[in-house]
Length: 122
Image 1: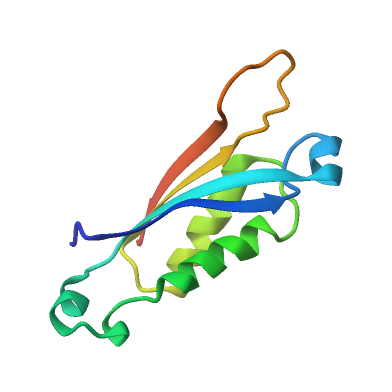
Image 2: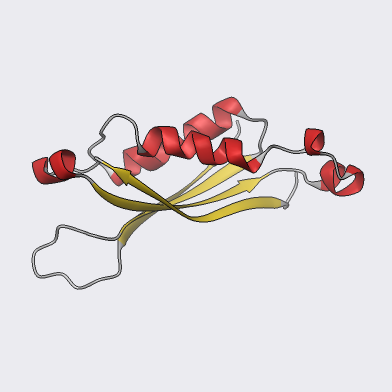
């Protein structure tokens, strides 16, 4: 089991996720942080892209979910991202932090609302 990680932080997408009809119609900005556990020793030793996973593929997997069909809950969006990455790539685990900066909570003043999930390969 590796403790090595590939981290993609601060990925910004515009999507139509949310429980309110306004969120689904108008859309909003979402910020995604991703931490993927993957054994980086082979790539560190060889300096070859073939010994790791191209980071742009992780970005694309997140983008497909974030810009794809609308979901109601942040929890469901994060789960779909984790499921896609674990299904497509031979990684050990994935941590997804999904932030919604423009939270539609009346009278709220906060930086963002977020969910964070951690899923391991079974």
